[in-house]
Amino acid sequence: MADPAPKSADFSFTFTAFLAMCFAIVGLVGVFGTFAAGLPMRRELAREHTLDEAQLALHAPNPQAALEALKPRLDDSAPALLPLPADPDAALAGERQAMRARFLAEAEATTYRMELMIMIVTVMAAVFGAAVMAFSRRAPPPM
Image (cartoon, rainbow, N blue to C red; front, side, top):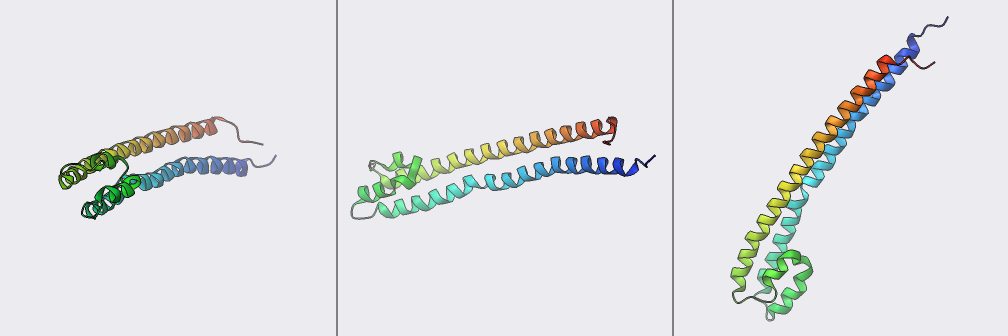
């Protein structure tokens, strides 16, 4: 009769590798999280740059037309500046503060969702891996 030890060792290695992959998934989620967490900041910096351009546009010969040209990049900041308000400098300063508050809220929401996703995926991977390992101990090795 052949020695069953090599088959048992191969079986154990397969499920150990599987368990390692369960945790690798968590690492991949973390990598995604590091990318996604920075998006609100990058968007805020781009909007800050656009508001700087809007500040320059306010002092152009035709500020309304200059701001209209920036409208697609102003996105949700555009209604604060278009149509041209009575005190455009004050409106721009107010919009900067409001924009920063919106992006801060977006960053906090993104961080919360990423933390929650990482925790859920970690628990799911650990439970699934533990269940497979427990099953592998009860199941006879493949022949």
